Image 1 (tube, protein in one colour):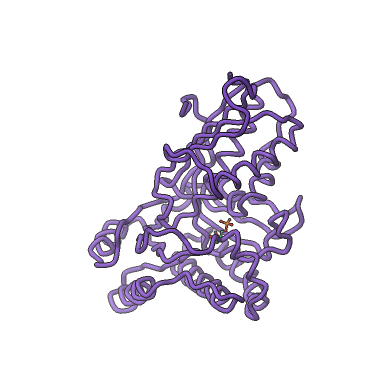
Image 2 (cartoon, rainbow, N blue to C red):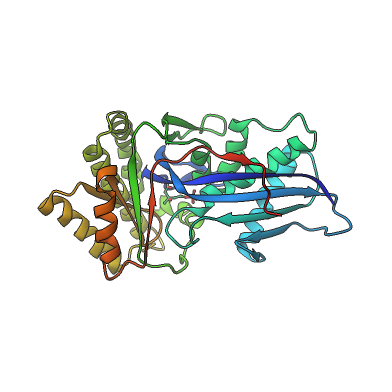
Amino acid sequence: MYRCKATCRAYANIAFVKYWGVVDANLNLPANGSLSMTLSHAHATTTVAWTNGTPAWEADIVVIDGKEQSGSVYRRTVSHLDRIRTAMGVNWPARVESRNSFPASAGIASSASGFCALTVAACQALAAGGRHDVPDQLHQARLARRASGSACRSFQGGFVEWSAGDDSTSVACQVAGPDHWPLYDVVAVLDAGPKSVSSHDGHRLAATSPLQKERVRQVQSHLNAARAAIHARDLKTLGAISERDAMLMHAVMVSSEPPLLFLSARSVALMRQIRDWRLQEGLEVYFTVDAGPNLHVLCNEADVGEVSHRLARGPSVQDILINGPGPAPELRNSHLF
Ligand code: PMV
């Protein structure tokens, strides 16, 4: 029934300097470089089995968190399997099962961990089946980038920078390992509903904003300062850059045509609260926010308890998720099926 099978666990990431906008939509080449932290507790575990195609099934089967997929998630997964099939010169159908450690709507980019785990497991399964020509990690990350840009950052643990460039130079490299700095990201889930526009579609609108050029121009100095702040374990600088960079990205979003308004009244209220905690009470906390309403609150290890406690008490916070720096993808011996 199965020719070969493999399982990978890959970790999501949160960007301090955001990727927003593409210069080549087909290859998913980013308008700017970005810098992220891989998350310790937000992961996707994915088993891929390449099959003989008969007698059990002929089309790909995709099951996520126990639910067999059909609509857009199925199509996006099959498109990515097609990329891998084309790269490897095979035409075998696959069965894919994936489990997330966090709710898909938690404001954590599940596409990054999902497409990283899918790519690694699919390639490893081919290697387990005797293929000697499977792409190395760099080429796997390049394939994953085409499905979800931020997925290429999840190929590295710790602190990771993804450079803008062409298909071969736009790669993600580790800036510092997971043990370098116990920085924490406490996610405040404010709205667990699905997003109205996916980031995949949003990237294609960025160029319609008159602010995008200026944001892209500023990103290089943000990257330089954020990289130096990570090396120096300097939360004050990294936090200030993260807030500013997220705000600039949202300024581009709201000024796109059509406008993209991901922040809710609750997001803005919590941003104010976080600033008050910092400026009036001296608690060292900063926020960043992706293409959704939920806030990622950055703090030092010593403050995680206090920050989580304050966030959990907030009337509009539905859930909190605590993450430190996480590892690179891991192959696993136990499969999901
Ligand atoms: O990789 P995508 O297509 O899910 O886009 C990610 C976009 C942001 O999360 C908003 C920013 C980032 O760099 O992760």
